[in-house]
Image 1 (spheres, one colour):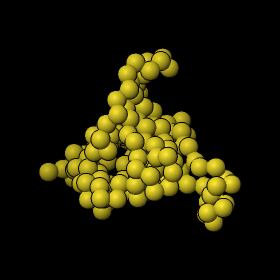
Image 2 (cartoon, rainbow, N blue to C red):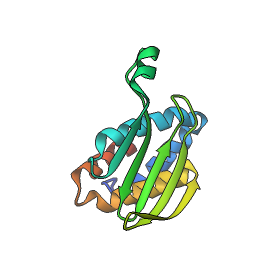
Image 3 (cartoon, rainbow, N blue to C red):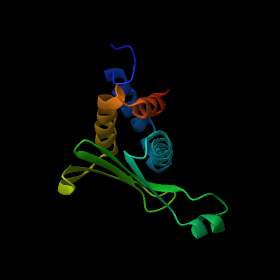
Image 4 (cartoon, rainbow, N blue to C red):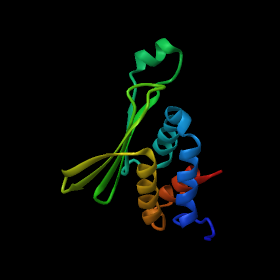
Length: 139
């Protein structure tokens, strides 16, 4: 058992458990996850894709986050959905020097484990990554 500080094994298990608990409505959880990551991570780590302003305005809301791409070291963790309520697609890319060496479409569980581990790895030197990991694993 660990103490639950950012980067601990408990954080990774909590994140995976949350994802499994919400797997019946993965689209809703993906929306939550996309919003948390896009707001919590520093701009140098994350790219955010939002729906068009006109489409959102016609629906009477702010533009929704449709995708994020989080780059940590040589890995890019992508989570995308085609629209609000759509089932998300999770991918992990391995890159070197801006060149994509491989792309794997993975389960949301594998994606969340990989991203949580990567965030935990940099949380000690990056306060925003530590905050994001805390928000993702809060009960």
